[in-house]
Image: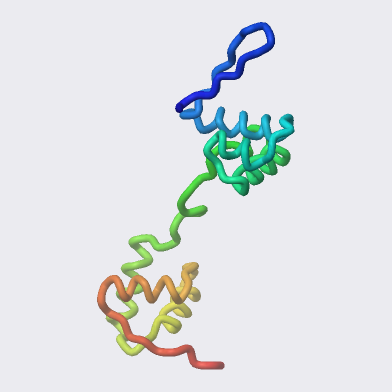
Length: 138
């Protein structure tokens, strides 16, 4: 069943396309707000759990139409690991093989790069030049 047909008092029909996620979410929220039926029944009718129905209802209350849109997936910001930075990490390692990821991070920070010790470790690991050491307390 890909649609719900609502019949009015005068015999007129309104069709809800359940394949259109945006319309389905709106109709779900509309019915949750206006109907006397239980939330479980209404949510099941539109193919959502009660929890998701509640989330969309709350999103509608806060942001109206924007609250019903899909959320952006993936990284929230651009990666700081550029090719230039990776080359610099490897250059430091090959120049001074005794330096660990924390010392390399300190050098890069002094040079003005913003990179975490964990990112340095990933670069080294991906290129097979790891040297595991623990951070010395200052």
